[in-house]
Every structure is written in C-alpha cells, then in structure tokens.
Image 1 (cartoon, rainbow, N blue to C red):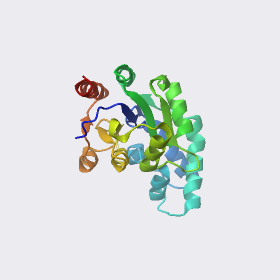
Image 2 (cartoon, helix red, strand yellow):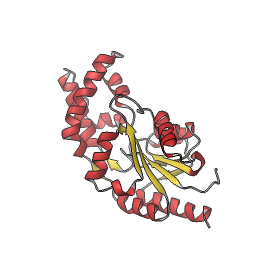
Image 3 (cartoon, rainbow, N blue to C red):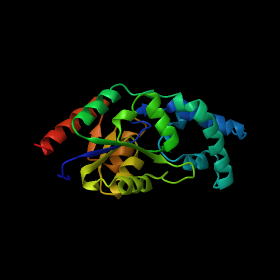
Image 4 (cartoon, rainbow, N blue to C red):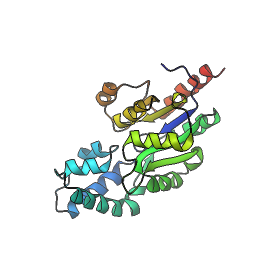
Length: 226
C-alpha cells in the first residue's frame, strides 16, 4: 500500500454521507410516469443511486435515444430541484466524523457525480458545508458526470497530490475513478453498493460505519505522521 502520508480526502455524497433514496427514486418514478412508462418500485431503483443518471435512464427506458434520455433527465431535475433534493437524510455519525477528520488536519473535498449546484444546496441544508474545503460535482451540461473526469478536474483545480489523497465512496465508480488517478480508495459498505460489487473492484480500506472511517483514518494519520 502507498506509504506516503495521507492529507486529502475526497468524499462521495449519495450513499456515503447521506441517504438520498426517497428523493432520487421518487424523482425517477415521476420522470418515467410523465413519459408514459410504468415505474419500478423504489427498492428496484436502488441501483440508480450512484452512477450517472443518463446511463440509468437509458437502461430504464431501454433506449439509446439521447433526446428521450435528456427529456427524462429534464423532468427528473424539475422535481428533484424542488422536492427530491431534501427527501434525504444524513447518516448517523457523519458530522462527528467529518469534524474529527478535519481536526486531524485532513483536507476534505466533496466529489460527487450529482450536479454541483444540487450538492452545494444539500451540504448547506444539512450544515455540512463548513467541513469541506471545496465542493466538486458534475455540471448540468454533462461535464464531470464520470468519476475519472471529475477527479481529473479536482486534481487540476486544487493541485493536491494523488499520492496523498484517498477517495471514499459506496459504489465501484468511486473506486475505479480513484484508481484511474492513483488515489487510495476507501469503500463504505453501508451505502448502495453491494459487497460483491465492492469486493470485486477491491479497495485499500473497507469501512462498515462512519465511526469506523473516523477511527481507521485517524489511526492512519497518526501512524503516518509522527
């Protein structure tokens, strides 16, 4: 494992810091219904939490028609921006974890495929924004929806060193994006990625709770920074 001292943490949002299932699934169902489709039950839409929605709508609508996918995405965003965005909750222990990591000297960044404009509002709504040096997300025009491109953007904008950085998330997209840029990777098992998914990709750390993230990384910071 990389032995360079850890200084920067990139956190995914959905399924890592907050549980967004009600807002995301209800907004997807609304979009499908508006387009005349029978929407799946919310439990059967959990796989849509994490990956870019353009891919999810392509599968849900069984189409590669970009205009129809964009129409679904537009309808989704209309509902999500006013209702779904706050049909969300912070996982227990997240504020305490972020505070302790910050006190340890870690520099925290948000790195989410969710549009940045929505992610910033969520952090503000739940009083989490002060824990983060900067919030990064995708843009409404489609830029940075894929984790490798988002992380490349973060590295370019901040100048942080990949060898001093870890990404923490609940889906394989987070881990694969981190690996594409030689970041260390942390997988949370309480989100929406299955254990099979996370184990198949592999990670430097597996965290089973927010408290465990704090404990493991605090120890690692101490161990690497005497």
